[in-house]
Image (cartoon, rainbow over all chains, first blue to last red; front, side, top):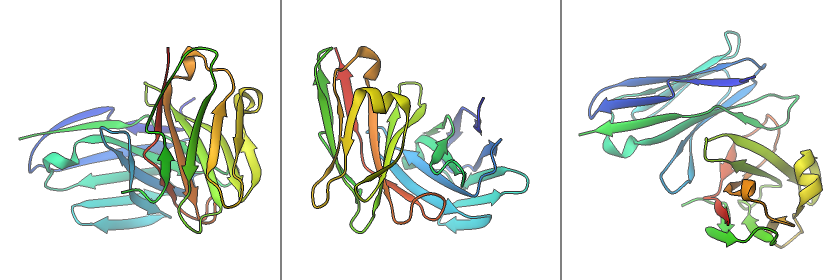
Length: 109
Length: 115
């Protein structure tokens, strides 16, 4: 089954608006990473999280290990934010990252 | 620009041919992972190394791939006999501590097309 479930699968936003992406985990995640994959395929690190929150510019992410979810908030969306966002959870017993299926984000002018 | 360097960027092979791709991990990162991302955005873990030793690998990798991370040379992943279903983006990542202790840095990937 889906150990890491992302929602929504796709999202279209107007430039300047805000959005929230979410990952739910059915595994006991110990850490979470968020990535942006650009059209060339490169995975860009956005956040690495232990339980708690982090903020970087217009992006903010939270990881709640007890409730088994993580969120990524994008404020004042810009055209360059377009791409596919992936969350990935680490489970200590697995020893590797387990990816969600991605959220394809399109920002329109 | 990524600190994990993958070559080649694109690879086109015929069915039955060998397909080899390389990865230079971020400096100082002893742990290396290979993932396969298919056209449906599904990531499949293939193999990981700590220094030169294999930590984990899936059955497919053991049977059909040859992989190594020699000291002072790039890591490599080679499909011994390419199949159409191997067409995918192959991503290499490195990590300082592996497992749950540190983040992964990914390369830009090798996009393999098997025709």
